Structures are given as structure tokens and as C-alpha cells.
Image (cartoon, rainbow, N blue to C red; front, top):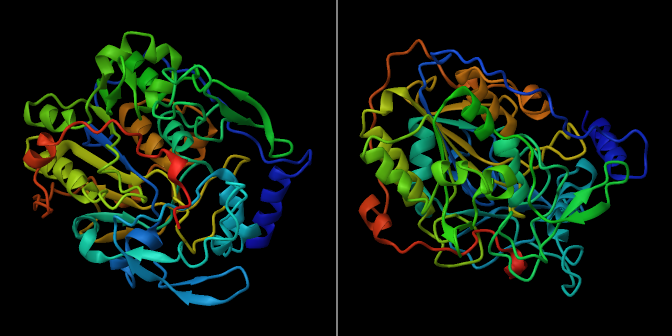
Length: 449
């Protein structure tokens, strides 16, 4: 089966008329919406951290989830995964080109070859640098969440691409075939507020190469548009930069949202505003949260160590509020970041899915404490859950094909009580931090090994 899927993948990346299909728009939303939700979930929060794999970040689940302790090099040599701090200065390549090096025709053993295919001035490969896991002491809050609630060990990013693209898939189930982070003189803003010279590359599905370069400002439909039409409240939390432009807001890439009323009413900066909205009773039905650089879990900065506290602060705020009994929180990492992961990726269309990323589900309705889902999920599954709960149609064939994550829930349960997650930093300390407007995934520092 691996080899068959590998052949299909190569067909999508070579000059072949049998390329895998690209994501397609399904249909527009109806203006009719039910007054009640399908599940006892009236508040959905999606938290997207940065650039990790299950093998790299959740070594604490070895023996419980599908987490490897060894990795395979391109020549078949098996090496032990070794510990590293969360704040490692090593930032690995993680472009679409690097994806195919790591994937190695389905062998999942090319990670030591990560090299100059992305950055021509760099010679040699990454060696053993990708074959590391984050020491448990640095991510204990994540381990506690997984053990108290639920974890998915077969959850994949819906695109074999970089952070900008994966965030688009989380809100829209597509990226208009864009497959690279925006590139330009100023890389801090990704979307309609980018500097005029900024471009992202559009994939030619017939040969897997660049068809053209375009400004990273698109106009496709998103989950925000569907929620608007249905009269359902929502907020996207992200840091701001410049004169109101979005630093790492997914919706800054959507022209009709960036330059329409939704930008004022539905995009909130800084991202820590979610803590204020929870405490003030202003949490919306749907929220998506992107972190600051310092709290993103992105490798490349020894200061980047507050991610577990940041995520814990949101979880604890909800758990200690009246929202707890009606909330589901989906915590994930947007792409693999170049870190080793042993799990085979089943390509379903020319864009993806990409490598596995962790998913922690926090809710009073998870099947049981410490439940591990082995069923295949992807970013489209989160969209599917939102759409099913609120009675919305699919945006593309990505969320249409994906499951709805309900294997991780039992809605017949009495809501379980919440136990606070211990973390090094408190919510008050995080709120006191200045808004860090650095792009969490500015790849100009890649390959610092």
C-alpha cells in the first residue's frame, strides 16, 4: 500500500496527466441555519502552534501513542532519537521541496538529507539534527493535557507545505494552489498587507512545479464567511503589525475579509485578547488563535519556551469559566518544521496531506482521560467538526473527505470536571508581556544547524 501511494504521489509531482486532483470548491452556504448545535458544543477554539511532529514533541506518550524512539536515515541506518530543549536554536528547513526530500518516495527516511534543495548556499544535509525529541520537562503541560484529555496520533496537515499554506487550509480547506510562504523584502506580514513585491508560488498540478507567482491576497470562501451567513459569532486572534495589518492572521490573506467589515468585527489583536474575552464572558462560538513568536514552539530561538504556558493559559481560562461545559478546544501544530516523524503520509491530492502533526483535544466530552485516537484525521477534520456542529456545508473536497473527529468524543457523558493544567507561567504574566509582532515562522533563519 505504501508503494502504491508513493507511485500516486510521484504522478502528482511529475509530468503526468494522471496527477492527483487539486482541492475543489464544493458549494456555497445556504442562508438557512438551525437554532441549535448538533453537539453539546457551543464554543469551538482552534489553537495553532508552530512546526512540530508527534515524534518530536510528545515523547512522553511513547508506549501509549504511535510515537517512535528511533529514526531511519536515508541509507537504512536506524538511530536513536535524542533529547533537545524546546528552545533549541536549530531551525530546520521545512519547505514543500524539503517535504519531498524527507518523504523520500514514501520511505519516510530522507530527513538527514535536508539541505541545499531549499537554500542553494547551504551544502550537505541536516545529519542527525532532525532526529531529536523535546525533553519532557519543557513540555510537561502538553503531556498533562494529553493524559487528562485526548490525543490523536494519526492527524495530518492537509497540505504538504509551509505554515502560511497550512493556516489557509485550517480556515478554508484550500490555498488556491499556493504552496510557499510569501517571499519579499518584508516577510513579517503574510497576506494582503504584505509589501508590494511579495509573492507566493502557485503549483502546477500537472508537473508539480511553479505555475506562476502571485501576490498572497486571495478571495476564496472561508469558515468565517459561512459563520457570517449563518449568523454565528467568531473571532480570529493574532498579533497586529504596522497600520492595522495582520502579522500572522490567516484572514489577512483573504481580500474581502481584510478590506471588509469582518476585519474590524472579527479579527482581534493581540492574540492574548482571547484571555480577556473568556474572563469577560465575550467568547464567541468559533475562535482561532495564532501565537506570538515567543510562545509559538517554533525552533530557532532559545527564548521560544512559553508555548506550553500560553496554551495552558487558554485551557485553564476556559476550564475555570462557565464556558467549560459547552466547549471543545483543538490544539495543533501547523506543520512538521523539518523534524523527524516515522508515520507514513497518505497523499490524497496533489497538495497533500503533509506530515503528521500533534492534536490534543480538550473538552468535558472526550471519550475518556488519556484517550488516543488512531483514526486518520487532517486539518479538514477540524473544519468538518465545526461545520457539522453548526450545520454548515463543506467548503471544499478537503473538509468533505475528512472525518469529523467524533471518535474522540462521547456526547452522552456528563461533563467531566476540569483540573487545572500546571504551567511555568501564569496568564497574568503572559498578559503582561508586550505584544511580540515578529512573524512566528519567518524562515530567513532556517538551517541554523
